[in-house]
Image (cartoon, rainbow, N blue to C red; front, side, top):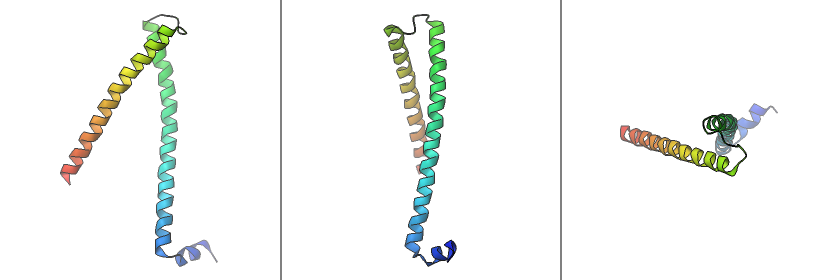
Length: 100
């Protein structure tokens, strides 16, 4: 018996659950792939930003001061960007809710 015939014989509920599961697996896989690409981009930017900081503040890259400075600068910038992103998403959600 072929695969299509087997599927037709399954109860509707099982077919529906199977389809939902397949969609969720695809969504998750796409999310994981996007996260992996984000990590690659983040590592590239990490090196670029560290080089820019070293260029403008020429101190020994292996010193504790240099590492702390880099960590503080990156923390401040990323917190600011995160706050702006969250605010943007919330505003978008509120706007979409009002349009409904």
